[in-house]
Length: 319
Image (tube, rainbow, N blue to C red; front, top):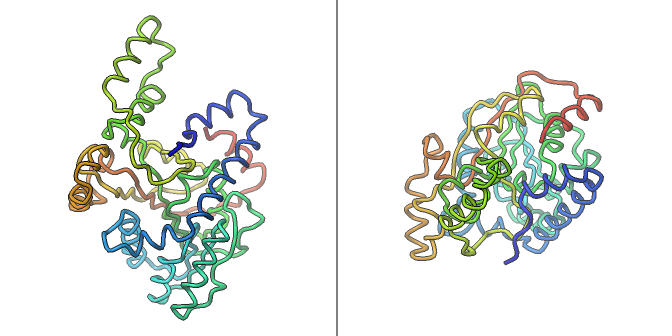
């Protein structure tokens, strides 16, 4: 399976040659769209699989939090085949869904109709294209399986704020960059050499450090879930994305725990996943390292009127 460029590699290209920004964005966005069109039933199958999946854990975390809050209207960004939407509809929430994959929306409309709900509750839209988004506001916006595949997360978050009511809630899933400290694979090598260590400052040590790190981390190809752009974010610094827009992070929920480095999943797959699910605890400090994903729960305590000038300033300041 061919791996897409990492988020760091894409950002490096932006910094080296900013004029290529929009070309890179369009290329990566189309790649993601093609993938999800091709795998139109992916999330429906994951949610319905008899063996509990990480996305089911995420869905349960968000639903349990929403049920404790005074929320009436919800927007599911990246609604996919509509499985979580149907659960909320059965709980009498007012929920709509958007997705940029027309093929997945075909599945969602079929599932909604089959369950007695209006198929027009889902529409095609691109969170990175404001002109396609709903013109209404919501008490809550949820987004799972979206931000890791976005080219421009900050641009998308600006759109979220514009659609969120005052004191509204956001639940957004990210992939955990700190998991690379535990995975002991090629991502660990990239994390050490791109995030932790300034390799260019090492002088004569650079080659030795590089060889040492390569010898410690497995480069064996693993069974990757998605053959598409996949970015990782640091839960310790994720507030830098939210706070400039007046969003307060209330809590970080960790999920998709691993009982051991993922390369060992191939030895006893079912036991590996069973033991991983047995330690799922969104409040456990070990989630910073053992969980491959996290959900940011954030509140819009200060309803900002975001002008084009403010948007440009924010996007310029976010790396």
